[in-house]
Length: 48
Image (cartoon, rainbow, N blue to C red; front, side):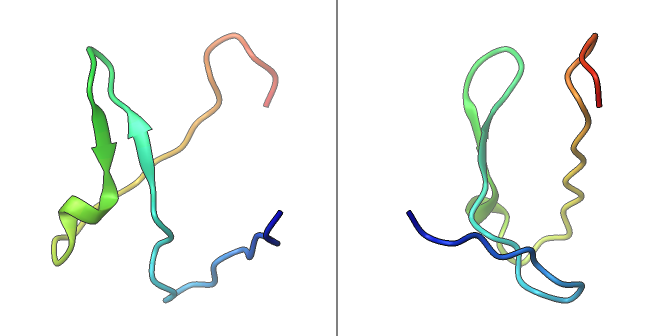
């Protein structure tokens, strides 16, 4: 298993693909050259 590295401010974003509400998938690589905000939050009703 590869060791994960925590990105630093200014690093390029790692490859990200995630399911989209309502179906489909978001792939960060399709947004190359655009400004993108990626926001993560804990799932509802879970600790964190």
